[in-house]
Length: 483
Image (cartoon, rainbow, N blue to C red; front, side, top):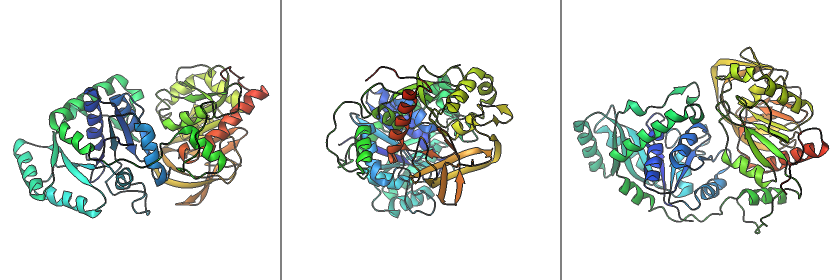
């Protein structure tokens, strides 16, 4: 496949990657191009803005959680049929998983995609030194192709002239110059930007302003020409159906498999309804999760725990991902009918997969506000940020994973739950620290660990099978016709 593509990187966090990447996506989409948005690393929030800018799902490319071998296939899946792909990097260009060299860095993703890199430089406190900075980034790894620079936070015309002269001397093209523009700033809080779902009207205005800023300050023709220099990618295109077939057959991820039939991947018969929490309180989800559940034979139905007073009709599986329930604790608590429905579903043995925010929602309380009471634990906000990649092994059989299943994941929260693990824990962490974490109780699997199911499609297959069995038993939900 040969999709023109750019990786938007920076020397460090806070340089303006999200501003430039989102603005470029929106500016090119305004031109009528089909733009495929991607984000390096585990971040859930930036892809929401990318989706707003392009009208397509924002997708993550995480070489730690999914493995380097899946980066290009997942990219090919997301960008199929598009005119251009823009990948926003993570942290500084060469920053990756702690102690793992280049693993999960923007540089590694760029190399795996054979994509040119555009470096966004915060030039607010430098002039000629910018050339030395850019030279260092361009020469550090010869396999990373730095195609040009976008200068951000430039103070004046004179400042711009000095920066351009320095970079011309260094032989590095300047592809854009952006001045300070507080009117397009996006509000942040304790875990980063405020998600799109919480400020959609304002977010639309912000994205439109970013597009205007980038359109005025960047050479879009030069950037598109640079994107078109990316060579063809020789890789399989990731498919949820083929991923499930590989998992069932024990084939390593990324290996070619025989073509599969177009029928649903799950067993013949009615499709179990898997309800997936959404809305402003539960915004963290990878697009591939719903795709894998659907390919495994489930009917995926969204619901909003802030507003819906009942689970979707026929629910026989429940997925509650990450988000910000701590921001909406009073409203979530006030929705007593839904809390009771979730508790009854779990008590009946229905399969529940809860990650981070979902874990808090299942607790007895969150910051003193009653939650669903599924778990004998209480949660509260904390001053301490827990952040980082984890290597984990399932230490209990559950509706999500068989005992011994190994996954890589990510923790990102400023809350604590006490106790941190049940008598039957969900995971044993093996790196960077050894501890048990999470809860397995009946059909419930609840944990702080964010995971990417493309790395282990058997998770989606197992959960869908549990939902089908629960529906068939008559204990919860009930089948819907769908074949």
